[in-house]
Length: 368
Image (cartoon, rainbow, N blue to C red; front, side, top):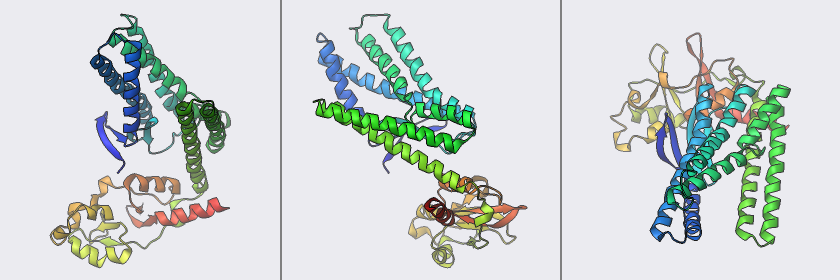
């Protein structure tokens, strides 16, 4: 995997993408040279120590920025899986979009407000000493960079925070989430094109590194805006369909007392290794077992390991109702990394909804 866990704060995993190491090193090297040039009376160890401390504190500020988004989102009832640090900063991984424009606005604005508060606090503390003192120099840089981070994120380039604030405003005005997303995406693409064009201009004007960096940011924003719109378009395409429309009464099931050897031979191999429902003799749903669960058990232990020992119990698995929307079902599958979910009705299993059937319908709808 390209992501590694760094810490866990307030129940939220803080992880980093391997690309984060690139920007971490680049900022550290740049700051080391900057502090040496701005403070020639500093010893080299002091300059590089200040650079290292500033780099770490800067990324702590990025985490706080994303935590602000995440905690407000969680207060609004939106589960947050993790915060991922990568080459452009950080991303809070929400499992779904907000339910209303007000929640969208509050979640989006929380990050920039945190950065503004951190910037103001650092600049305020920097007034307590000389700007050439190492601690004060660090505070000054952190103050200005946090203000810059807040302002950058307020650019209406969807899906930046400013773009989401814009979508919230448009959503509140039109009461149409899909329309607001389309409009915010178009503005985001214009902003991205501006970054790319200005980056190319800067490149040919002799500012090679700055030009490449700005063009790269523009390309990233353009790609992110397009991906965000496609997700919204997919949700809209599935909006008129429910689980009942694509349910199937055919599914694989396995008793909890079987060992894995029997399960694989008698059930899994005959059903393309899809997830299977674990049910007792009275047709009561006990849990679900997936290919991922099987992969956790060494081959030598298949004959002695029972299905009930590695299954995901019913209390921890997702289920759907016949009247539930397909977009909701697809999101639950993604959250639990399964290709199908049981459909419950009147306390029993009515059938299953499969991801491949939803995706086939989605492709057909988007092709029109």
